[in-house]
Length: 169
Image 1 (cartoon, rainbow, N blue to C red):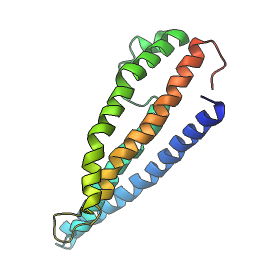
Image 2: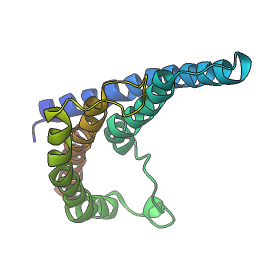
Image 3: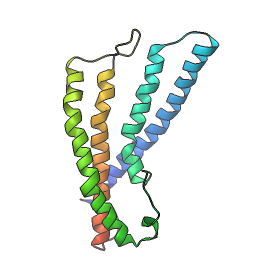
């Protein structure tokens, strides 16, 4: 994988990470509005409540590649952090090849018909006053596959470069 491609993937992950920061702020403000409306004014909005859920889903799906890039996913680092760079590269390489990429492939394979069926009927909320954008929310599953898959390939290339004793990219 070329350094240009790696740089492009990293920039995409960083941009999505910053976008998720903004989405988190929007989610916080909307959740505050939902609570204020419900308990302060004894009113409510299904659309606002669903907006919070949509943003929550976007944070997890679009931020996964950013989290992988920054080693933020949950793992046990008791041994890993003390290992040599080559040994960590082997763990990263094998973990990506044997676990992460097959999982991403499975999610994509299982999600495709689910998302396409939602798009075919432009699925909306079953709730009165809800958002008519459920098909877009479900599409985020494919966004997860794309963004996490790209970052996984970039991390795989980095592990291979380390194992080949090339300069890190």
